[in-house]
Image 1: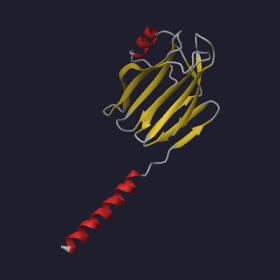
Image 2 (image 1 turned 30 degrees about the vertical axis):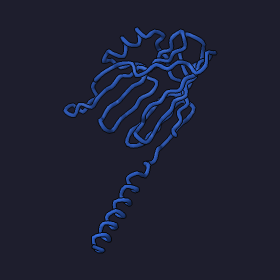
Image 3 (image 1 turned 60 degrees about the horizontal axis):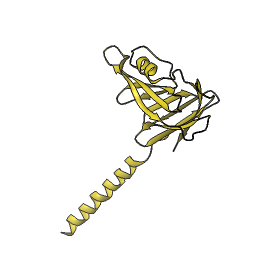
Image 4 (image 1 turned 90 degrees about the horizontal axis):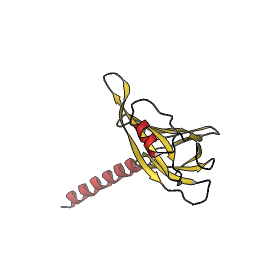
Length: 171
């Protein structure tokens, strides 16, 4: 009986060590300069511009554009390792100060080796944090399961907003 108990405790100790090793966070690499940023972790990467274009001021124009397979002027690009995808994010700011984030998803076609258009749709809408202009918003983009990425956006002009300043932050 004592041998069984010792064997069980040894097994638990080994499993506990394996779980602790697996739970260690992978390193996150952050590279931010005046014009661009690149953040990578868990095999995924987010790239973007610090002064991001806002090409749309109406939801209908943005929806029409992102549902087409042609590329759009993106502000942020997420490249996923599993499943192999490229997700391009585009911004729209309405006259009420609502930031609408649209996305175009391209998935890797293994036969051709090319990323092909899969879908385009609205990801989310964010009301401005304050009612005063220039408006600010906080946008979350999941870089990975254990790597939350937050983008702080600030309108660079009053409406119609044509660009936002982007400040990325990894917690």
